[in-house]
Length: 425
Ligand code: BJ8
Image (cartoon, rainbow, N blue to C red; front, side):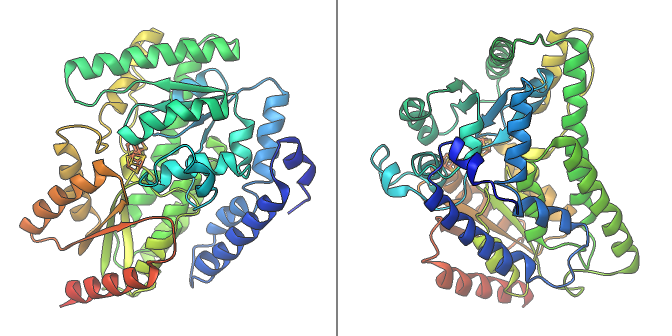
């Protein structure tokens, strides 16, 4: 990697802490990803992206800013990238997956706050996230209670927060609220970018986002083969990079991997032997570099074949129908897609249950591991319903509750291994 210290200093990062973070993440990546055998060659692209995630990609974003493009940071898959692209802005996911700056974060948040929220505060307060520092606007959203209350303090820390209200029920009123919020967000984007959203620019934004999702759908479908052609870790990585990369380049790179995986499937070549126990992961999102649970699973003689999470199929399923002759009609199409997202903050949320069952069948999973972050009420509560429903249908389920620390790794490994033995017997 080139020397980016000047750029990082310009962004106000704490260079010493940031260097240490890059070293730890680089080492983890080496141990977790590069140690895998028989990876698709196309994953070299993602290795490169990860090695430059705070380098070249940030430089690209800074260059885009120098050309007058705005940068929009997000924490939730409910923020429509299509609208961001329609004003030619850059859309970046800001969720963080490491225990960093938690002590500082706890000056603003109760200790019993989920790691995802703490990390959003921690990364900003420890001055280690160049993405946060490049943003012109950070979009928060009223989803779980933790997030919506945390944004009240976060706004003073970052200074450029915009909060979007979101529905909690899949009702006509809920849909109307989502549409009203998306229209307000569109106006906000026009105001900060100085660009008007037109039918053409919005159609273009929809097409770029749809193509990105189509590539990820293709990748997901190829994992239904036994043996499966790619590890769950690598597929998760692609789903994580989905939120950072240039969308057009990302689409091309994922499609190139898919070509390779199709050839693997034709030859019956897999990442693990045929008959290896197949796991569907379900639950809270996993942001970079949160790879603890997938690593434990895939080093316990099992393979992950799908992710029912926002860094996975919950976030990417369904396309926007490019139908409409006005911006308002196109926003309706966007609402139609996003209103189907079955986040656990919705009540009731039967579609998520159906989706988990459908994914279990589609990817021929032998069991489901439900991953809930500690103190995440929506997913923890829903996990009990998921467990009951799936066990009733004869699908074994393991509920895991964890955080970003490594303290419980040994204990989790013992539980995962016992679960895999149960599946095999
Ligand atoms: S659409 S899952 S990205 S809200 S883990 S912060 S729920 S206490 S992240 Fe999410 Fe949007 Fe829903 Fe997806 Fe709260 Fe739970 Fe923490 Fe969570």
